[in-house]
Amino acid sequence: MSTASLDSLYQDIILDHAKRKLNSGLREPYEAEVHHVNPTCGDEITLRVHLDGDVVKDISYENLGCSISSASVSVMTELLVGKTLEEVEPIHAAFLEMMRGKGQVEPDEDVLEDAVAFAGAAKLTARIKCALLGWMAFQDASAQAQSDTQKETDK
Amino acid sequence: MSTSSLPGLLPELEIVRKDFPILERTFEGVPLVYLDSANTSQKPQIVIDTMVDHLERHNANIARAMHHLGAESTEAFEGGRDAVARFIGAPDRDEVIFTKNASEALNLVANTLMWARGDLQIGEGDEVVITELEHHSNIVPWQLLTERTGATLRWFGLTDDGQLDVSNIDELITERTKVVSLAWVSNMLGTILPIAEITKRAHAVGDHGRGAVVVVDASQAAPQLPIDLAAMPADERPDFLAFTGHKTVGPTGIGVLWGRRALLEQLPPFLGGGEMIATVRMEKSTYAGIPHKFEAGTPPIVEAVGLGAALDYLSHIGLDAIHAHEQAITGYALDGLATVPGLTVLGPLDATQRGGAIAFELDGVHPHDIAQVLDSQGIAVRAGHHCAKPAHARFGVQASTRMSSYLYTTPGEIDALIEGLEYTRRYFKLA
Ligand SMILES: Cc1ncc(COP(=O)(O)O)c(C=O)c1O
Image (tube, rainbow over all chains, first blue to last red; front, side, top):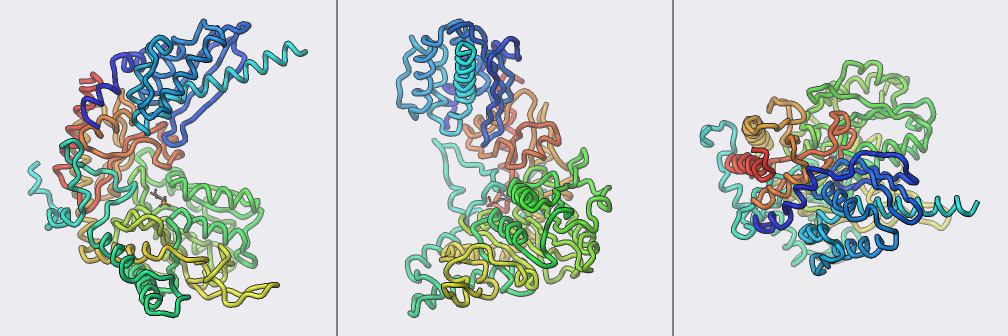
């Protein structure tokens, strides 16, 4: 990898989010908590989701990981908190599509906003999992939160 | 320090480097600095040529082909076994078993011990002892064995400076101990373990006067320490020794298990299939003698031939010379790393007390990010837990960066690493 592609990987947005880790820390209330690890490198995240009806009211987390994985979850919370599950779905899908597109997918900035910065990581096989860790944890937690909420309403 | 004044370096280092064609690679004009040899070593031309020659001129299945090529191939394959036996000073060449890698060799021992009956049988009340610095390949097979037999898994801890804590050896290795399995050299901390002392202790316990079975994972030792099993005093000689071909400049797909003949003969087979039998009837089979009893199916033939060439190559240079070179480079690297602000080395700091893998942390930068920036400078290191999660946990570290040298590593490459780490700090605005 050249120094130029290094700069396209570590864009300022990413380095900035990796430092600030927006919305980090574990908070109450929450309906679901998950723990995900990246078995190849040992990166870890514990993530909680709090839904209010169908609105993602809060995503809180604690993570240990590289700047790509830290920045990715930080950007994700900024993008998703406050949106309805229906609004979240296409953003989540677009991020996954970009990350799994081997650098061939032209990301839509209107949908992904700051998350387009991870297009550089999508070109690096070794870093794709780093960028996806938080997003996969959210997918898992929100599915659990929804099925729990479902059970509550079924009662 | 001027590099020519570094004592211990291989005198013909530049010639040795020419034996490894991959070292000439560049990435967009930046030359490769390969510091990931504890992960896998690079291959000299002689290994590549020997394997190509075998495939081009001698390829046939072994043992079962009644033709010229079959005879040549069998001879080359068994020649690989002879080379392994010479390399480790095996008392008997039939005690050398080919496996897929070190992991399979360790699983072979753990599984056959699990199936063993008689005085080798392991059950409730028995104990298996390992250490906290093992590679996952020398942890998980023993967890499986103890979970399945009801035996108990115990382990040696580590001291704060990364040495094996042997202070409680008498409490750990007791009459109940059936197996002691440990690395000779740690792939993460670089620590060299006192295998003779531990083997002696393990052999002295037990009610049969035969002691516990000792298994040594020599995956990181075989590349850099001279090994002479036959020369070890019998009570200090382990019962099994495993290593993997690809770290000793050989190909992937081949590993070695050496075992004491009497034990190998007593243990049941591992995998069933062709080549491992004496005769097969529909009701029951009888098994071949060692080593074939443990080598079911067509083995990795060209890999065994390549491994033989690799070990002969290392022996030709001399393991004492390679060890001295590794110590010189390791010492030089430890000195260099000590100049990088915020850098902490995990493991012993004395180059004469350790192997050539150095794991470290750099304040404020995650190992992945270090490896990425170093890669942009052509420098290949490993980042992560290096398949030694418990050892990382022991030091409260989730992941680390590891540089590992080998016989082709130059002081100039260590300088490049140190510069690369300074660059990394500047890149992430720490300097
Ligand atoms: C100490 C140690 N044991 C075992 C292994 C496993 O080797 P392999 O993956 O070739 O089976 C390694 C290498 O990764 C190692 O360093």
